[in-house]
Image (tube, rainbow, N blue to C red; front, side):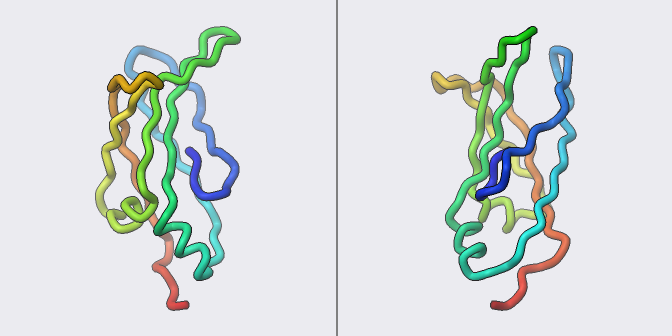
Length: 105
């Protein structure tokens, strides 16, 4: 998962023909006007890779506006995953939860 300027977050390696991803990560944020602007204008990226021995291959990727994640906290967003040549390769549900609401700045 890539979001804002944080270091990329990586899930555990899963095996099998239909892996069940259950990945959670947390980011500690200091709310500023600039952060709120970035959350409104930026995107989050999800990428799925296949690892066979030493070879790592990007299987699919998806992008979503962080504003969409924030404003739909109660509902997971289903993202379509696309290969590098634009073919649909599946989907993944993404959910964002804020521990505290946005402060007034």
